[in-house]
Length: 295
Image 1 (spheres, rainbow, N blue to C red):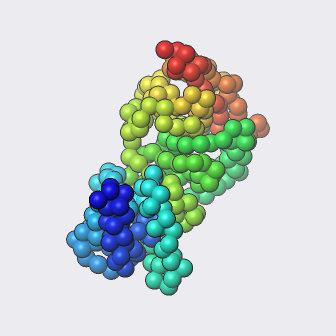
Image 2 (image 1 turned 90 degrees about the vertical axis):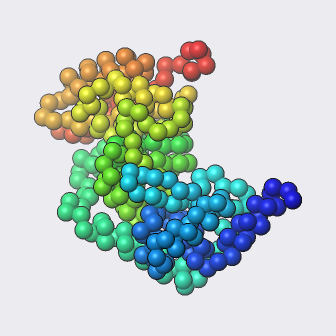
C-alpha cells in the first residue's frame, strides 16, 4: 500500500471519533494543555492523553513540553491531506461551539484572576505606534519575541506575521500570554520556554526578532545580541526596545552601539519614544552583509 494511502486511512480512522474531533478543534484555538483539554471534553486525564496520542501518531496534532507542562497544537506544517480533512470539520456545530466557549472561559478566568491586569498607558501606545511604523517598510515574516512577557508585542504584530513565537523564562508569564492571545483571537502564536543566551531554534529561522527590554538587565548583552543575530535571516531585522529611566538615554545609546558592534550587527540610530518625555529607546539592527558573502 502506498504511504500516502496508508496515511490517509490512518487519519480518517483517527478523526472518525467524536471526542478526537473535539480535541483537534480545541487545539485549533491555540496551544492547549492536557489539563485544559481534560476539563473541556469531560474525560479522565489518562483517557484524554490516550486520545491525544492517537492524534499525534496520525500527524493531526503535535505534542511539546513547555517547562513542566505538556501542550498540544496543530502541526505548523500540515500535509495537504490533513488540511483538507480539518477543513471538513463542522466547527459551527453546537458541540464545537460549546467546547470553544468553555476553553475561552478557562482562559478568561486565568486572566481575570491576575492581580496585575495588563493595561496600556500613553507610553505603551507610543511605542506600539513606533513599532507598527517600522513594520510598514518591510514584511514581518516569521516573528520571534524574546522576553515576550504577557504577549503585548505578539498581540500587536502576530496578525501581520507569517508565524509568531514568544519566548520567556517565566512560566506564569507564558501561561498568561497564552490566555491573552487566545482571547484576542490569535490562535497561531506559539509560546516557549527559553534562555535568551541559548534559544531553542535553528540558525537563520526568523525574519523579525524583538528584544523586548531584556538588554538593560542582561549580564552579557553582547552574547544576547549574538544569539539573536544567529537566528536572524539575511535581510532580517532586530528590533531592540530598552526602557529609559530619568535620563535622556545618551549613555544607553552609547552602550547599545558598542554592544551591537561587538556582536557584528549594524545598528540604526536609536530613537527616543515619545520624543517629549521619552520612556523608551527603540533601534533596529541588521546583519551588515549576507552570511554567504561573509563566508
